[in-house]
Image (cartoon, rainbow, N blue to C red; front, side):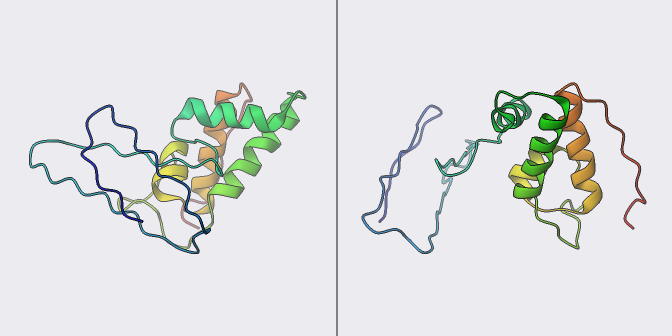
Length: 139
């Protein structure tokens, strides 16, 4: 299936469901304008929208359900980080570390254990849960 369209700043491109479930696919987005910057966001109904800090916090609250105890919220945040940030032996950011939860979950998608710890602490702070991180940097 090939869809060709000209995108503007407010264009939402809806890709129709294929008749057969694809086993793999490639999405090519090409900006052919020398003067226009394009910001692309890809979403799916099968994964949560984690494109901003506020949406990450909302997803954690949704996963916690009606029982919004500190323990339930903390566990929901931990599970979210565990699900969407696989461990990788190399650092995600060329400059060293990526501790921003939005970048860790949306841009890189992988990182070291201390990246996950700092991102998790940031999410806990956003939920009102006190947290501190102590680690052996790049152990």
